[in-house]
Amino acid sequence: MSVTVRVPTTLRTLTGGESEVSVEGETVGAVLTALDGAHPGFKDKLFDDDGNLRRFVNVFVADDDVRFLDGLDTSVPDGETLSIIPAVAGG
Image 1 (cartoon, rainbow, N blue to C red):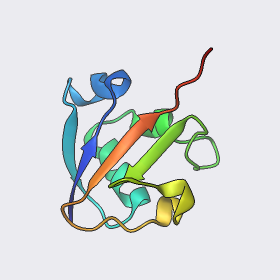
Image 2 (image 1 turned 90 degrees about the vertical axis):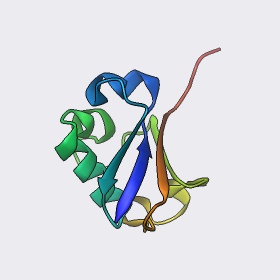
Image 3 (image 1 turned 45 degrees about the vertical axis):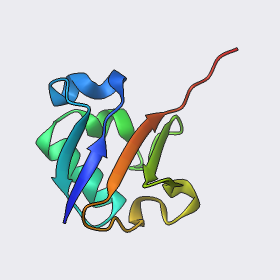
């Protein structure tokens, strides 16, 4: 199942500057694992030591935040877009 992953500017050094890459996977966890396999370095940036998404990393399947769905077990339909969006803070 091919999925398009939208990569934020801050992580594009890992994809050679590409803003979108295609990987295979049926769940968010599988897609992110495949992303790290194809472009090493994502695992350290996206996951904490317990294997959970870092608090400052938001992941969306289409327009839905996976934290409000099934997290890493959220299904990703073939041809769908997964977006990685770093949280923005400041004041």
